[in-house]
Image (cartoon, rainbow, N blue to C red; front, side):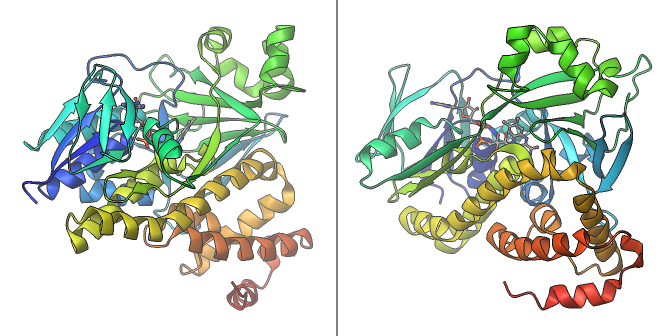
Amino acid sequence: MSNEKVIIIGAGLSGSMLAIYLAKRGVGVDVYEARGDMRHETVAAGRSINLALSNRGIRALREVGLDEYMLAEAVPMYGRMVHSIDGSTKLLPYSGRTGEFINSISRSGLNIALINEAEKYPNVRFHFNERCVGFDCRSGEARLESGLHVNADTIFGTDGAGSVMRNAMMRDVPRFDYSVHWLEHGYKELHIPPTDGGGFRIEKNALHIWARHSFMMIALPNFDGSFTVTMFLAHEGADSFDEIDSSNGLMAFFEKYFPDSIEHLPTLAEDYRANPIGNLATVKCSPWNVGGKSLLIGDAAHAVVPFYGQGMNASFEDCRILDEIIGEHGTDWETVFDEFVASRKRDADAIGDMAEENFYEMRDAVADPVFQRKRELETRLEHEFPDYFSKYSMVTFRDDLPYSVAQKKGNAQDKFLMALCAGIKDVDRVDIRGILSQIETLVV
Ligand SMILES: Cc1cc2nc3c(=O)[nH]c(=O)nc-3n(C[C@H](O)[C@H](O)[C@H](O)COP(=O)(O)OP(=O)(O)OC[C@H]3O[C@@H](n4cnc5c(N)ncnc54)[C@H](O)[C@@H]3O)c2cc1C
């Protein structure tokens, strides 16, 4: 494949990961990125500073030789630490098996590691401050803001949720299917600093959740002892960003809903003022490719809301699966892209749907005693029968099971277990083997 040359638009997480996979196969890669080189510039405030990395993402990192490097500075999170309004806390483990946890890692640290790794290959070149402003689906040529017109054997669109490449396809590809579902909630990032001694102010190894039914706040640990806090609130209406802003009621809001967090947020007012409100949406589209001329990958093809912690993991899985297909068909791009889309689209739709559903689970159900009993029961099931996987575990800790299968199986299990847990008080006293037998008979 040494004569093959491709272009990647966007050097975010997907674009940089894809560049490595392609370079390993001997393909020449030019990556055009709208922003400056993040290795020399400060990252704009407001984008999620840390991310939950789990098994699907780790598998791809392993294949490109970066798993150990990234995990060395990750903070393991073993469960959700639920903060009640009275200040009490309860840890709900993510899994009943030992060794299963998610990892909080730095977004910029990861992106930089991927770019550095890609640049080790002589056949990869990054071009920063080169924004793509158009793509011609017929000629396969991309137009850059600098005036350059670039062309290659094929062009990958990894330019994120607001993809210019996708917009061009929408305009030029007949019957291009596109949907965007905006969440009525937005997000704002806040900051818990380390203690004076550099330690963690709240439990280090957990994803903290303040679930308040119609809204919530979460905190993920950073390697330096700080936490990145994300508040998810409706843009408008009761208990919204609008309401806080119009009544100047930030402190009153926190005293009412998140009182135990205030002592850990010394720069709450400044952070709230300084950081933008981000929007959240699920984007679905089809087809992702224009014959063999172009393919969308990652958020450009399927942006998902962040509530399953899977957007990046799914994007890395995209790259891994695409690479497998290239392994079978070489650079017969049309065949590769058609096969990729045929096998991957239903899984992208599945994780998009599950991520939206998980918003309601996190903000609402996590504080519900029936849901808490169900999680305890599932943890027991996983502990005693390691072959049992909850829906969360199938999505998060399996790197071999398609999302669409996890969704189908997981939904059937959830329905059964929620009904069961509504009728019991103590999960330690149930016939656990009998429950497993009933789960095994569920038709999916
Ligand atoms: C608040 C929040 C929390 C999240 N938490 C998690 C998590 O815990 N775990 C997880 O797995 N996922 C998480 N995600 C999702 C994750 O961030 C995305 O799925 C991931 O960043 C997708 O990578 P990407 O490279 O496809 O897109 P992006 O990361 O958006 O990268 C796109 C790149 O393309 C560049 N670009 C854009 N337009 C152009 C253009 N016209 N020309 C050239 N370059 C362009 C951009 O500058 C950027 O570098 C979260 C998302 C949000 C918003």
